[in-house]
Amino acid sequence: SMRLSSTLVKQKDAADFFNVSEKTIQRWRNNQILKAGIHYRRKTPALTNSPYLYDLEKCEDKLNDVDRRDVRKLELAMA
Image 1 (cartoon, one colour):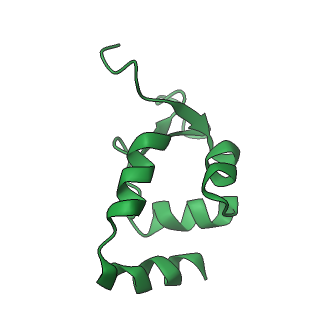
Image 2: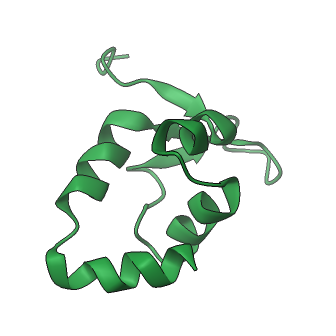
């Protein structure tokens, strides 16, 4: 793969890294804060119940980038 720098981690590890619950990570997915194919993907795309893997670097960029006025949306997503 060309993107050797990207670290894909399991949902639990992503939650630990961002110091949030897995439920919060799920909310970020549901609220489109984290987007499929950019911030996360399925380990085995063909399997619908395959676990998600998260690109920590891209997730971190996104969460750092969230515009100030989006902070409320982020907080609601964490509620």
